[in-house]
Length: 138
Image (cartoon, rainbow, N blue to C red):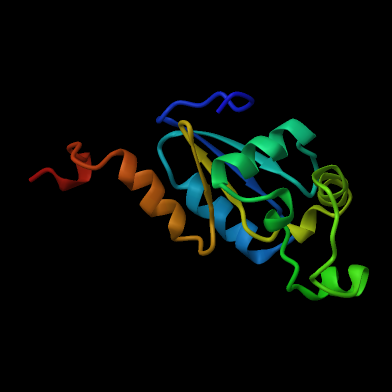
């Protein structure tokens, strides 16, 4: 990933500390022994280039990063069929980061949208599959 510099031993979590999934994902990633970088969208914004790169790696549009089914979105925009270009969606995301309810995990050059906190474990463990784990020694 161009904007995000990572290796397989370095994890990046982009999450929102104001939602329960974000808090749980943070707890899971903190249990990893890998190098961790976290970005809390409740406190810091990503650049438009970073959001574009994330969406591209996830093979989603910028609009698809936003949870249009949540009540906050419907209260603000009225319906989930609103049409905006990518620049407008990025402005919405930066002004209302809580609209992205799924944390984003970056592992090496791969990017994952987290739907349940335990997803983090499978993405972390997938990178170390086949390696001897110290807790499996007899």
